[in-house]
Amino acid sequence: MKRGKRYAEAAKTVDRAIQYDTADAIALVKKNASAKFDETVEAHIRTGCDGRHADQQIRGAVVLPHGTGKTVRILVFAKGPKADEAQAAGADYVGAEELIPKIQNEGWLDFDVVVATPDMMGVVGRLGRVLGPKGLMPNPKAGTVTMDVTKAINDIKAGKIEYRLDKTNIIHVPVGKASFTEEQLADNFQTLMDAILKAKPSTLKGAYLKSVTLTSTMGPGVKLNVAKLAN
Image (cartoon, rainbow, N blue to C red):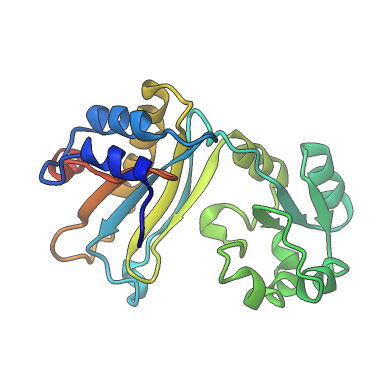
């Protein structure tokens, strides 16, 4: 993969042989986020889990104390009073069956998170092939299948993020923007790590955290000291 000159210069500042402390890693990532837009700071957590086993699946959600820095568009599947409640709570789009052809046939995907009341999951299930691969299917573990749509919407707007293993047993999540202060990024990252450490499967043998890397959208990855994070 060909990298630009800016990336090459930034990569020189990162010592590949070192596992950095969190504070040093965040400072480096911020310094190397030199794109013309406000880059997202992401954590990539390689685990020792085997997601093919149901008891080693990791999935959940956590509200980052300083938010993600991103405006999130929320679609709520609900009817009647719950649809009114979702609208009042600030959902960007609210609907039911009538949204199915719009998403399925017209490819409408102008939303970032989908929330559904439990009674609507039969309808939402029909969109599994479209929403599933994009990580947009509502899920009770992530708090996006719920009767309390107000709380779900408030949490998401406050900076709630979902974490889950991908096919290679890595968790990829945003922890803020490069414009955040180092303290804000550190708070967000610590909150995320606390949640992930708590989610460690009891059946797992061997190392849980294999590597943790922080990076910005266009910058090089910075590896963290896993031993210190796991304590």
